[in-house]
Amino acid sequence: MTETLEFVVSPADAGRRLDIFLARQLPDWSRSQLQRQIRSGAVTLGSQTVYKAGEEIRAGDRITIRAASRELRAEAEDLPLSIVFEDDDLVVVNKPAGMVVHVGAGVKSGTLVNALLHHIGKLSGAGGEHRPGIVHRLDKMTSGLLIAAKNDVAHRVLAEQFKGREVHKTYSVLVHGRIASAAGNISNPVGRDPGRRIRMKAGGIRARDALTYYRVSQRFPHFTLLEAEPHTGRTHQIRVHFASLGNPVVGDTLYGAPAKITLGGQLQKTLNRNFLHAVAIEFHHPRNAKLIRLEAPLPNELQEFLKALERED
Image 1: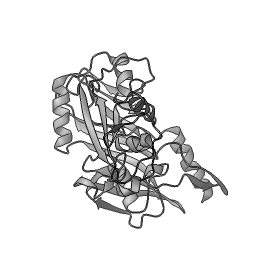
Image 2: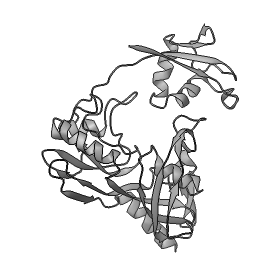
Image 3: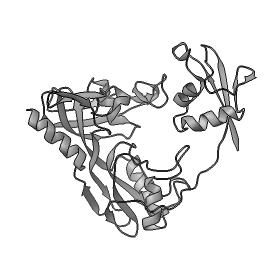
Image 4: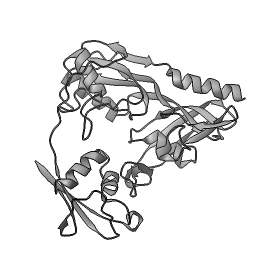
């Protein structure tokens, strides 16, 4: 099936390359995929079909792309997997940073779902063929605990717990700057960033209520380590909320964190991932309602980063 998507170029995007503009509007597509679409004649600029990915666009230009949409099927792959808990109904894994949760446009392999299908075999079908078993997600560059359902009954019950805000997740997060209060909450609606579709924004397009609780764990001269508990589950919620305070998550250059930091008196590249780790999760078992609480320690690279900060004190 093919769907036609249409965009109008804003003044802020005037002068951009066509492929870069489309990549900003369609974050699930890779730039190389979009370039192939352009070369194949699937993109029009006004009434003219364009074939050059580097075509310069102007404010007010109307761009359409005829994109072939098809349901992706996840296939089993022999990939490393850290299982924290498993029984007949569900599995909880400690996802590493850098791993995408499920396949999608531009991502066909190397995902957590690919690994789960190899190690476990059958997962619930409630999420569709491209994300079997997936009840909730973690961002690519976020690590930590994630639940997957093995059957549709478990999937439904767990999904209801997430919807009812009965699942409690705790994240360890290091942010730039000083958070003044020892504990507090951030209550800012989160929606899509109108300028960059890949980003979310406090008060963005179709913003929905979002609430994050936090408490300070440790202070450093230029950073604050916290435990954060999202009461709601908006996309990029923790990252957006702390960025809105002017305290972006370390490593999260998408939301304003600096690309370079000073450690040991030397200017160096920041972390190659976000300092955001789902350290604990608490939920009721979908079969017997038993309360389950699981924890995952900080990955080595985050522990080493904290040790470097402690040596700075």
